[in-house]
Image (tube, rainbow, N blue to C red):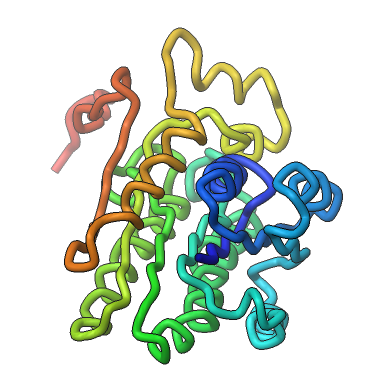
Length: 253
């Protein structure tokens, strides 16, 4: 079986690459950082994987890449749409619009491009599984999570829409929605500020990449008649905030 993983050079993607490879899957590793791709490919065994340097935001290149896959990697079994990011935690009226655009282009458009490129092959073979990486942020808002949460709400609804479109086929759709996880996520969000990133996980035990990889592996190995629509997964020490209240005085009528 063949699994294609976007964002394979770090976090959930790298954990998936290692676990699926260990379980006997051939892997197509998609990532932007060539040095990390090369290192990961060597670790997994070069005959069992295909590293491809690719930015999922590049629509033309995404479609060309899938069209031109080598014959022994063409029949993809599982697509893991993992590439994504949160960038910044500023309120909507202060954030750099470029950060919003980057999140939308990667989390939404990149995911859509890869799905559209791979899906016809699944339909032709009447077999396949698309696993999208969403987030609890797509269901529960928080200050500064504006566009990031919006992109993950899109991923959730897009996944449900795909499931509706593919009713009657043997193609499965799953949306995995992690909570706090100790990957490079916070380091990217805070533009490389390690102290801010580390403080996010202070005095608690977050999820790790391996937790999500194992959840995905379980999801794609259910019996043929079972489809896991959504999995929301949080660390034990993460909860739900109360509604925020601004106590700045009564509002005059």
